[in-house]
Length: 236
Image 1 (cartoon, helix red, strand yellow):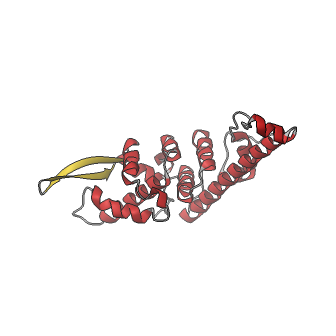
Image 2 (tube, helix red, strand yellow):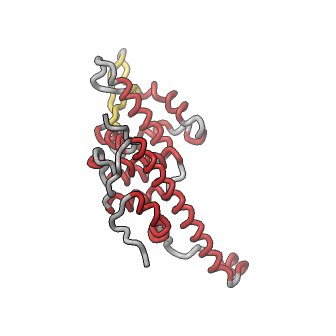
Image 3 (cartoon, helix red, strand yellow):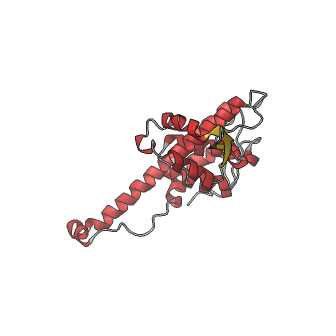
């Protein structure tokens, strides 16, 4: 008999994770073997295809379980007892986390789950954040997080009511952030365009010494998204 997974707490989720992983996998059509490949495999073609699907199920289950374990640790370190996460958030969130290969983004998924279970911060987790996180590339995530943290640092200065960054100055920061990802090192503007397309940052220009220089700032949506994907801090 399948587990009742319409409403559960994190402990129940850990126990029933294999059921969730198996049921949530959208396998689609059969593995598209060519005629030559089918001749090679013969009667074993269907068995081989099912084995591949099992590997997908196992991978996604492991990523889901890792997300839950990370979130549980965040809740423990945050000093709160998690509430049940509504199904509308829980299952799309776990599905998104199950496909995430990048550890930085996977940790953001876990933080989103932890905050969704928080008695104090759950109202800040919107269903639309799941779609934003699903389509986010690793370099977009790392730059967005850097902007958020840098804005928090600058807010400590009373003369910085609005946090903005000159785009040319951010290029070196971007290259340092993606140094371990050399293929993305030249995608600076593509990264900014993607963040702007999701309304997470805003482009504008300013005149400096008769030159027009582009600047960016985080939008309210960008600030709230990163806040929801940041591990919860202990309540004061």
